[in-house]
Image (cartoon, rainbow, N blue to C red; front, top):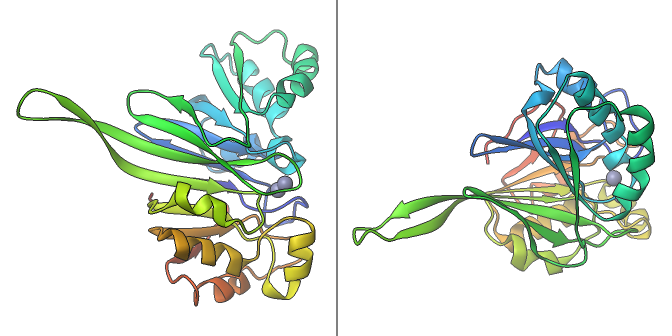
Amino acid sequence: MTILGCGSAKPTKTTSPSAQLVELSDKTFLVDCGEGVVLTMQKLGIHTSRLYNIFISHLHGDHCFGLIGLLTTLGMLKRTQPMHIYAQPDLERLLTPLLDYHANDRQYDIIFHPINPRKHAVIFEDRTVSVETIPLKHGVPTCGFLFKETHRVKHEDGTFEHVTSKRYAYCTDTMYSEKIVPIIEGVDALYHESTFLESMAKRSKEVKHSTAADAAKIASMAKVGKLILGHYSARVEDHNLFLQEASPIFERTYLAEENLTFEI
Ligand SMILES: [Zn+2]
Ligand SMILES: [Zn+2]
């Protein structure tokens, strides 16, 4: 998993808004698409042609403002492979007039798959990867995504079984919610938002975000392999402060930073 952006709503000099690449079974999924995704990918030397499917957690601008730029650029790059976008239904309504205006000469299809963020369900499945929604608690309808990599095992009697080898959960934006624990139990890696510090806990609840300690409590309860913090408030310049508050609660905690890649 490679971080393209891990800031929150206000962009800063060091953090771009939410976006990350999840690579499983030779497929590259884009999860959230904050402003500037194309530029960030270019800086990192990652070709946009690699993108397979896009998953959008919710329609706050810091998670989807990069879409029109990306989809227009893919048109200019002469993409022909269809692009599938999994998001709540409003996205198609909002994006279609922009695409008609700016990208109507594109040679690839954009296929919207409406999802219900309030329901835990499988929304994508092929031979090796499945993706499930994780209902989250935020100011607008929001869901996280649970990625599962599976492979086929052949038994001696000739029958096949699908075995899950890797699991990765993406949970942002959300306030502290124990309801997600059974869904993400035991995942190899959990990305959980950590917008605020403990000193800002009151504000955190008001705007329905989490503190670093909230994220660590969830990671500990769900017994995950490792916790990656992100979606940092622009008010906190030193991200180590998040780590200092989370690690005593959950030891295997890491900080997301742009351009960092984590093994799932
Ligand atoms: Zn956000
Ligand atoms: Zn949000």
